[in-house]
Amino acid sequence: MVKESGISIEMSREANKEREKMTLLHVCCGPCASACVPRLKDEGRRVTMLFANSNIDTAEEFEHRRAEAERLAAHDGVAFASLPCDHADWLEKVARVYEDAPEKGARCERCFRYNLGKAAEWAAAHGFDSFTTSLTVSPHKPSAMVFAAGREAAAGGPSFLECDFKKREGFKLSVSRAKELGLYRQPYCGCEFSRR
Ligand code: SF4
Image (cartoon, rainbow, N blue to C red; front, side):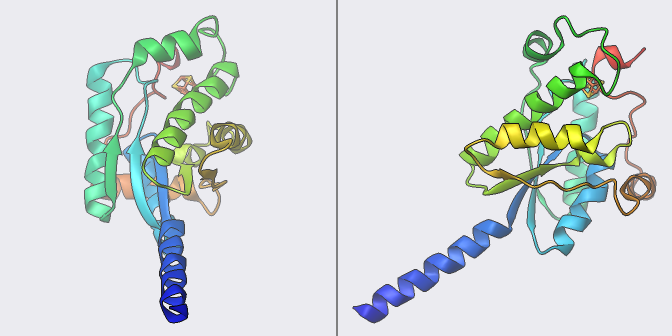
């Protein structure tokens, strides 16, 4: 009996270790994700990419970026999931009255909170203990602002891993991997207000 309970404790420790290795990576696009996946895998993590980007302004652009992210996942041998684009909801909850805010300003901060909130919900619903994001690859996205949004999104759920992917030349890595894999590199951030 004691032995059986010892086995079950050991099995549950193993199951916990496996769960700890599972990491959800919120991805903004294929090129940025291409710098994150190898680094997370090098740490022994089992990565699932989640494309959750209702900030993207048109259905065509959303599908193009989503398909490229999925192609990267297949190439790098990791799982992939995506959430439908609800740009009307994003406009209402994020951008309304912040349309003229500059990039790296209040609208972007709200945008990070929105997308990372969706990622945190998905992570919790699918049994992940932790999540992170490719948003920190871009030099246009202040890592401290992304981390604050991630911590807020994580409140009471899976923990947010503060991975600063722009460190150790992460952006340069994203450019070179995107070129090598022929990934589409979009000419604007995502929302209509970043096109100007
Ligand atoms: S510029 Fe980019 S980060 Fe800022 S609100 Fe638009 S899509 Fe979001």
